[in-house]
Image (tube, rainbow, N blue to C red; front, top):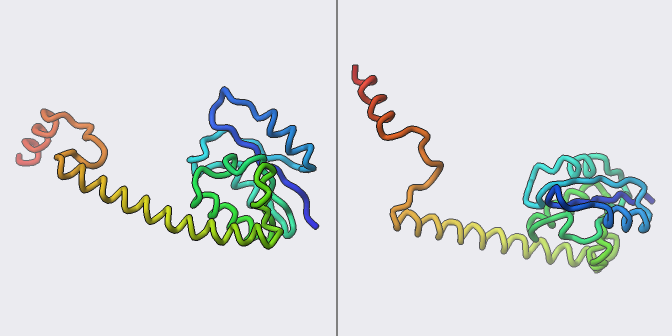
Length: 160
């Protein structure tokens, strides 16, 4: 059997990891990866290091699933990476997420289905919002860094 590896995360610099770390140690985690980053940040370096370090039978432990992921899709994706390495996932506050049990694996399958639906809904809402914005005459994309006068000057120089 592998070892319990903890992951603790807070979103802002003002928050503290102390309670999560204490809980993870009490649960028996031998190593704890600590991160101060938004859950929406896909480039969480400590989470990447944790997943890269996993061995067969290891158990990734979090105090609550919202410490690991911001959305159902994100949770499913991360847990899938963990299970692809033949490791397990466990949330102390939500024991139904324990992938070492048949119930946990069932919940993961359901989360996968929900993640697909969530991704489709997000894509649809984003597309509808983009169409609505264009119909309202809103400019899409990043605002131009050039002023109207600068654009005019460029056109004049190109014509010469």
